[in-house]
Length: 115
Image (cartoon, rainbow, N blue to C red; front, top):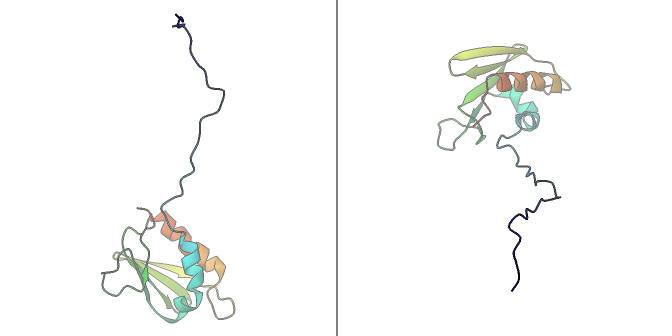
C-alpha cells in the first residue's frame, strides 16, 4: 500500500495570469475628428441613448447629453445648463486638432464620457 506525504505542498513556478480588459469608454477624440467639418456648420447634439429627442450622435458611454456649436470664432459646449467657450482654430475650413484636444480636455474634466 502506498503512503501519502501529508507535508507536501506544491509551489507554482508560473506567474499569475493577468487579463487585459479594455475600457468601456469610447475614445471621444476619434468621434470629434470625424465631425471636424460639421462642428463649424451646425449644432450637434450628443446623447447616450437612441430615444432622446434631437440626438445627432449616439455615444453609449456618455453619462448625459450635451451639445456643441460654432459661434463667432468659438466653439461652445452646453452641458446641462452650463456653457463653455473654447477658442476655435481653423485648419483648411475644418476645426483644427488643437481645438479638438481642448474639447476632449473639457469632456474628460467634466467626466461626461464615463459610465
